[in-house]
Image: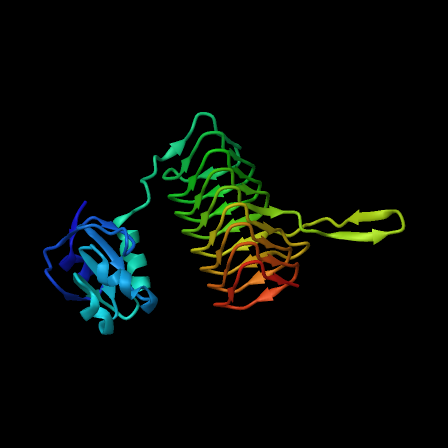
Length: 273
């Protein structure tokens, strides 16, 4: 549904250079934007794209407002502002509260009435599913797992056991949380498996990309703080501790018992031992 540029400026605390009645109904890149699109500019290497954009408006810093060939929303951090507006214009689909007929929910599990449990989901004993949670088809929530409000498990996510996930998290397809860590003791007769008895604790507002894994702790829990971002195809070993708002790109491997602080940025294919 369209919203005026003036309303966006007021709602998101921007200064407006242009007609407040311009209608916006989508966000786009500088090159693909159309007459009802909003885009952003924060990289001077894209100046030519800015000069040629056909967008209705662009989010810019004050020093770039004069370079825009259209209306501008002026803010100190265009990319962050764009993220907020894009989220506002593209809300998540509303849940269809209830449990699909093909799902299995153990008698001891607790599922909030506002949660949506899709087809072929299995929720095991003593699991607790919070308000507004979405669990997509084919996912498994193991025993003693807890999922906080408004968290979303997309298709074929596995929570092995004793996994606690906070509020507003997103687990993308194929994520596995709480599988056994790589605990093996050498002996004269070969490897001896060391029981992995801990769990996994994940904070609020965490997003984990497709086919990434977070192993359970050997004895204590593996811990991910609030706001952590993990890309696709990453691996976090048992008993690792990752601080709040740390982000790691694709194919990062974190060994067991590693401690990573807050607000760290870890590039693709990095290994941490």
